[in-house]
Image (cartoon, rainbow, N blue to C red; front, side, top):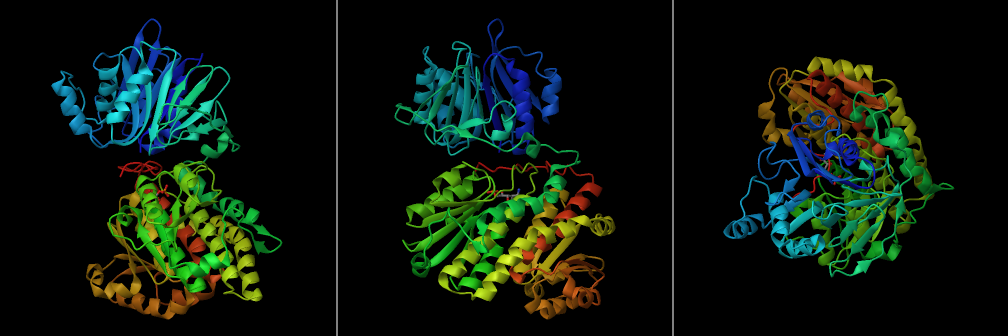
Length: 610
Ligand code: AGP
């Protein structure tokens, strides 16, 4: 939610800020702005409602805003409608301090009332203006000190980039519960919400921790901890290529990322299989640890939660350990039963989702040990975990996750195999079959991606529907949840996922002539039961699109209108092959409806507000 970027150096800042914002636009895209300091012109602020191209046009690609120090922002509105006034940067009453902000200032109303009593007048409805005004209120010629005083009174989550016309030789950055990364270069320094915004300029980054403040000058960075003491931070070299965050000839990031899934799964799995065995060096886990567990909580949001749903079926079947999957936004408020013997597995692509981070901290406070499955290296969730299983999906830009979801599943399989081995739940033959099945998976996903035309064709038949249903049982149901989310988030079609056996308890009343029901029927032990549910909806007029394994394709074809078959995989890995056609289906449906696929309305990639 919201992307911030900052630059201080010798080049013109505005074009660099615009380029950084273009790479952060996935974080929010209802308005954008930048503030640049120039010796002659002072502080110049330009903001524009709408996509970043509006801002780029208004500034002629940054050329109209000279100066070598500045901050930029791309917004996902929380306080106040997206318009020019509410866009960031927000400025102090003096017009000399500008602030960009990602997060939410929770006590903004109280602070605003205080400042108004002190004679400060506000221009916008935003919480961020309170931060700018408060810093301005305390400013007596020392920006760092004013920022410190303001932060003592601010409650909430924030990553802030701050510039001051009276101190044009510095850029100040602070963070609490919102991501902020510093980029180190020769003669310049940068800050951003995400590495992608600065990778064109530098690959040497350092991650600010909560409560830290950084003062950037062209020559270097000084970081202070929450007590104002200087701290040394490790610089990390980012080694992925910029092309990983570009469309590379594809029309949409989402399609590119769907196509990248075989590689992403392979990159996640291969380094962890050595001589036919799953090796998870990054997790300290013993048989005693597992035998001691009273329960495993899986905590996540959105698609990551759906991975958790699939994981529950897989882990409980294989390990016989109770697994509870909880939406992170609910976890804190549902009096979870956590003891010293509880393990929490936190799943997050971004590693910054605030609900997930907060739930994870709560689980830790209650005594749980924390493992996580995370894609973004160095993210908050990764850094606060006792063990991280990184997924190697590479940067995922489309708001609708695809390749990160697939690699999260792969990480779950790896964990399942390793735990099953530790607990002695599988014999050698089963173990070998599971490992071989996992190694075969990228190739099987590739097979599906070679033939997308059939799926495109089905999308062309159904894209005009107002409502769709996804039904399945067991892990097919978990895939249905993801399929339904994928479709609704990018095509804006209402859809629901149902455990197929549950339909008759109410929802079947919505089925009428021509309603599309996508029946996921890969889970073989329940194939016949699922087909009974298919007959129930067909009897009420539904059109049924079946998704099943090749082994069951002809049996399914007899009961449905159309069938998509996927390779026969090791049964527990079904979600990985079933999800691909439904991702493609959602993509083509959204394409045919003319939707903005990579940037769906009202959404943002990284949800850093509660
Ligand atoms: C999925 O397509 C969504 N963009 C969303 O549900 C996402 O999975 C959720 O916000 C969780 O994000 P995270 O994995 O980065 O924590």
